[in-house]
Image 1 (tube, helix red, strand yellow):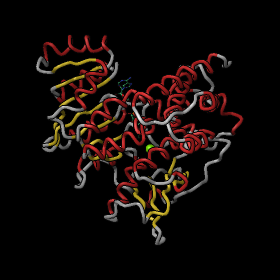
Image 2: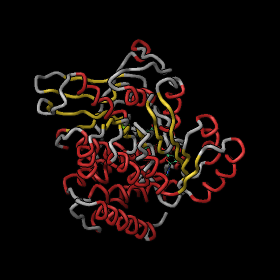
Image 3: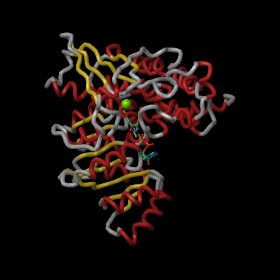
Length: 391
Ligand code: NAD
Ligand code: MG
């Protein structure tokens, strides 16, 4: 029996993880669940899975949770705040940690899991984008296992694992596939008036609101280039982005002998999640089987630079190195949040990030303090830039 902590259990990845686990309760036991403010779903999850710990980052929500669990589930310990998240990420009794908090809020607990020798199932790409080398060094120093859950990186992991070759010397390039998001064919001059609802209507994946906007701007793919370069120790110049609107090929690895391996499947996050939980085995899922005759055709397209300026910004951040990726990420989180609150135009997201990157100096990302400090400076700068903008 593997004991599991799910960080961010009320989100899209968290709910899918519980769905996979609920079909394999002989193999996996939920030891801890965490959420931020979504009390109703969280209470239901606690009743259903009876974890030892339930953490709500938001203190007021944690108090309400305690009240609700008192009668029906008095054995569940309720914790609050970031300390609670870190505690359940490093519990001795836990084997696997699903890191599925969105954004920088997930960095500390994800690092804690990495430090304490867990199998880290990494969905929270922002944590790795922010802390890159520090994160990978932490994993290496603790003998933790790191399994990417992001579908593209999970696909690459599967291609590399299948060749029984974890070394990257034989890899010539990586091709990250992208759906192109909801605005792939929108006239560029109409992008400025796009609403949060339109941006969140992803053609192929049902995801949280932040990553949905990232997919619409393609910052998601930019973050994924950074993520892939750290996970697989690959030069970012050898990581290419291919728009593949059907979202069936989840990414490809080109080897120096000319072979190209890909992983295919219906766009359903329960595939990478179940892979990460079961690896090196495989387990049954309820995912619909792939029907190639039904799909009938695969298309591929190069991303247009003027439609997706965030891709260029992400590549610039990698080139600059140090805390640049953390600065890029922080500016993006603030801008996306303001866009979702109708305080910023869709096309201004990239403008804000560009401005923050030019105004906040990057540092050597050698310690967590430096990274968190630059994250803070970038957030303040992004808010400043947005204040000066007209919606
Ligand atoms: P979501 O918004 O649906 O869920 C986020 C979860 O994080 C929720 O449980 C929420 O309670 C928690 N959370 C939010 N803010 C928090 C805070 N300040 N402190 C503590 N907890 C907080 O997001 P999602 O779509 O499930 O994405 C989660 C992560 O997985 C993101 O990093 C995303 O990029 C990545 N990811 C998601 C998908 C997908 O299909 N949804 C695919 C690939 C990668
Ligand atoms: Mg992805």
